[in-house]
View (spheres, rainbow, N blue to C red):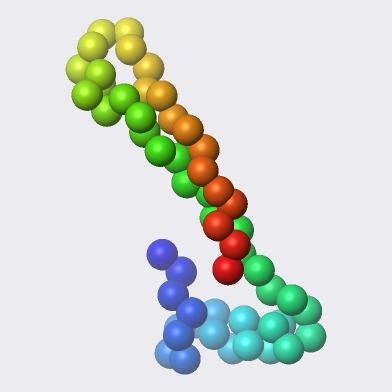
Length: 55
């Protein structure tokens, strides 16, 4: 979690940079599609990347 609020440590940096340089953040997540198979010996998790979510 990276809150950008007036009281956060990154707020001033974000505000200053946003005025001169476009500042975007990209987030990628992984969707675990087979969680019920976790207990099956030798079975690997199936992870599907989703994103980017850009703010």
